[in-house]
Figure 1 (cartoon, rainbow, N blue to C red):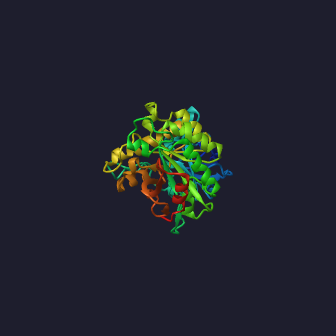
Figure 2: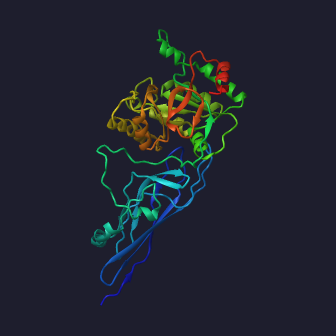
Length: 397
């Protein structure tokens, strides 16, 4: 009569790619699987996972959120009963206060010798699992694989923002809104004139801010403060450029880099794909990102997102995000609503697509932890002098 057989424990090390704000070294995630065949031929298996954190450098985007505890993960594993195999996977990592979250975009698989194929098929359904970002590993293993959608047009699942600690917070952090960084051409209409800041004026803005003690920060530093109380510098400010005009690369980028200052550029991805001459190229965007600038989404084609249906908004949210991720290797997590137009469904879809916050064109500088998709900004106009900018920065609004 056959006796129970314990198979050796196998440890698999997936290959992971870290995305988000800047290039990071990925932590090592070890998935350990063990199986046993009983005398009656029944197979039992156990899968566990653990994470080895890596140091997170400060970088140009402010403090990082150090991982702790076990990771939430997307893992599918099958274990052959007679041989150990190698789990191969590629997935995207995002840091959260509870550990590293794998963006659910990968389909890991177990490679094994040909003779084990039948055994893999026999036990695959018993020990395969999707481990979702919202559940501990032990609970997630009990969840059904590929549950049926309950909505005819489901919103996409993606990473979540840093978990709030429950405290309500407000912060006065001016978010400056620039557009063109050039002198308007002859005959320009009043909109082009109003949205244009000359390079020498912008240089004066930067110098005035530095002399007054303002420190440019990223949206991620602001969100870490609002969600978890991470410290802010004494006079924080966020610089943003909408639309992705080429003159921001030609004129704003060199002035920022010369002063060691950073900014966020909200780009329109289809315009870059179409190689429109007045907009950035992907090579320009890559150079700016590599130099410490933040690249975020301004939609696919600068069409209003207000009063649009779910499918259209998903196309906008995921289309722009996936294009940026394809071109830069990082996923945008902040959206600037084109023309400042949005509604509640817009917020729902972008949040569900993995975005962490949204910025508006509403004037103001105070932001609240319970309203991250309605961040206010300070509009910078053609007529905004350095002195006027300092006055706007000092307002309590």
